Image 1 (cartoon, rainbow, N blue to C red):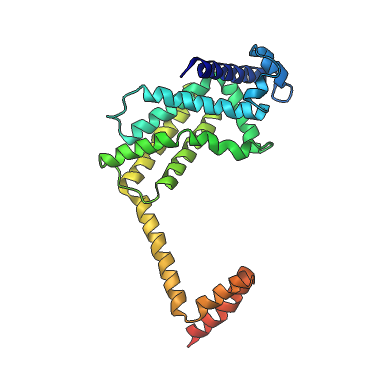
Image 2 (cartoon, one colour):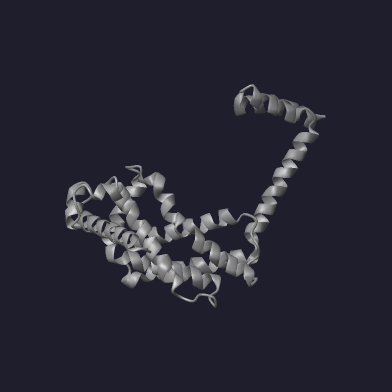
Length: 257
């Protein structure tokens, strides 16, 4: 990283932290972009070169913490870790990075979930920070035959990512000593989840769904003109109810015979 990029990264981080501090102290609505710029000791116009709105600053906070988590994770040798241990470490590091600003995280999470701004459409950007790490974990687990190869890897990564966000929301509501309830929940849920992955059940479910879909299509083809009537219904914009009204009587007639 050259000096220019490093300085920009430092300024960006200063602005994010200044925003979080002010949001916590006086609330999101009462905090102005000018106040954030002055807390970060940058020019009033300079802040807009980095962030166009307060919403973008909130989003940047989560992206920054995710990036810091991934950086810390990269400094740890996890080659001898199994999948459960790797995911546990990822969760621990992420929650640890959010802990100093937990009050802000609680408030901003409510704002995001309430979908009061465009931020709700951008929350996937936060989760995408972890996609590469999760893929690495799965690659390693498959490579040492801890889990089987999964046909739908992207879907599996998405599910694990959703699980991480679920853990975050649980942690935000956890008032137990040293977040012991979260620790127990994560341990139990990871144990169950990893066991399911090792068993290959997700692949079996996909195979079962594929079987039923193929069987259903076979039955439609076997009903003669039934499938053609459905396709014609689609092409003539009759809609689902019209299609099935046209197909079902013929099907019932076949059953009566």
